[in-house]
Length: 468
Image (cartoon, rainbow, N blue to C red; front, top):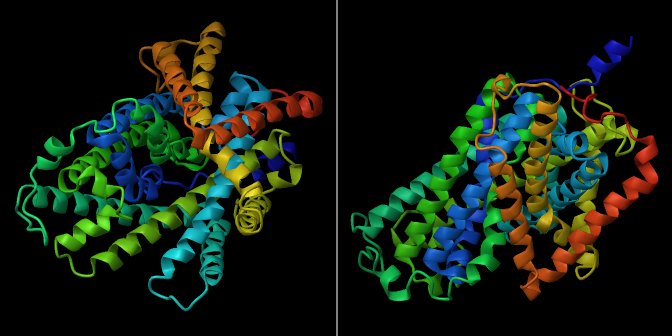
């Protein structure tokens, strides 16, 4: 009877290799690339942006291989929150899980509003909240039906974004060398790089803009969250990590080169979307509408991924006694419906606070969301570091691991140091200092709350009961 109940409360492994690949790829190709890349070039210069995205790609690589070793050895839906609970401490897992949940659920709410605003271009007389309601119902239905429904939606969302970026890169390099004429300027080649310099604002500004880079790369950790619902995780997760990482770096670096060569850095700071501007200059028919559709797709993709990640984390924490038990229940379709409803309600509350108390609650939530990714990456690296030590101490052999981090323990240690240094540099930026302090206070508060309120009620050996 107990075994039947346990089996009834397990998620289905219905996510295929192509779903996992597009989920991780689409999670990092969104507004961070389409809207934020130009701003980063404007602030840090072409050289600073290139170094920043390459440096961010290095950190991403270290995070992904650490996550890969853990996810292949223990493919659970709670992912890095469960790993932190098991290999660092339950209080660390509790704090990491709730930080990521609030950040991800809040981001989903913001994306619903952003999608409504984007629709104003085509339907200016329809209120934003109506479009918000339409997209909320759409994504809720996709996530409530089956995991396969979510995966298929994200597969097509991500596919549209990838095709758009590839198309942009081809048009961009054609314009740089004069194969595709631009409307108001000759073929730029790389003249703008020589005129403005690689580091017009100095090299120090790079450290301040690194958070923009990290924000652009966030979403890659969804591979770990989806591991508990993917087919053959021991084969598909390593493939997804290897394939996605280099494509992400190539897409971002190629886009930075194109934007830096065609537009002066000062001009990029004034363009709302340089991707739209470039296609306009190249004479692409209906360029603004095409790019508006791509941006809408990117927004819905991010909202879809955030809704999925938040729901699965809440379900995993409920199974470990770190959230109300009702959120651990699954529907007949093997979907954590109660957790999904709560996540949706939380997202809607974040929308209300953005209107009713923009300078208080909403700023608090977004500040926590801002550093949750960096702290989560540190947690992943530290979990792998502690896992390998415990694994070897228990008599395990490294060669028996189906996917392992090379150059251990150098890789996880360097990853932790790099992520920590990014947080430290935020302290020197007045615009980001408040968010940093709020995030740290929330992290410490979660740890203390768990230690004094939940520790005695915690499920022993958390993480062992929700493996799917």
